Length: 149
Ligand code: SF4
Ligand code: SF4
Image 1 (cartoon, rainbow, N blue to C red):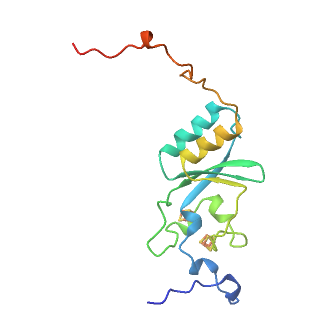
Image 2: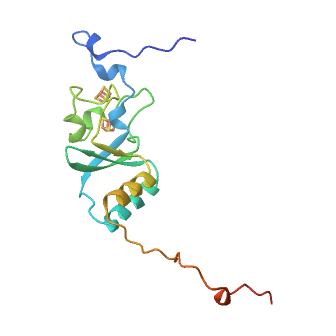
Image 3: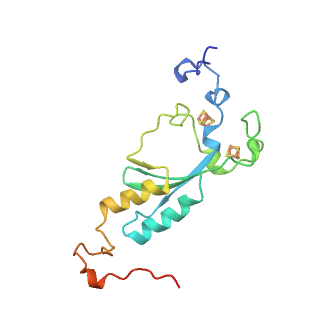
């Protein structure tokens, strides 16, 4: 079985609309700028968002964004807008010029999981937790063994 070749933006003919060749990628998520996390507490809040799933965080030109993957409720099965003539201003202002049709966006940073986010926090922030154990050997007389009742 041969793979279906994706239509190329540069092959668009006059009068054609690139959206007719797309699966409406721009209607399947939203993203908004957030404050840059600076301390563990900030990263922990972001981690909480991400633990809900279908949430990513990216950084572009120094600005941090929270991204939520969610299909618009008016997106129809044929990838068209169900409220085209009444769609929100944000949708009206969006253009195919710099859209994500090709799916080749590159970010300064992109965190897909809360674990990645936390690993990053630990790499850029000073360690917070003190070691809970000592490497000093414990004298045999001080070792307490569990006793069965
Ligand atoms: S604007 Fe771009 S991403 Fe959105 S539907 Fe049209 S081609 Fe697809
Ligand atoms: S209102 Fe229409 S154009 Fe806007 S996100 Fe929903 S389906 Fe897409």
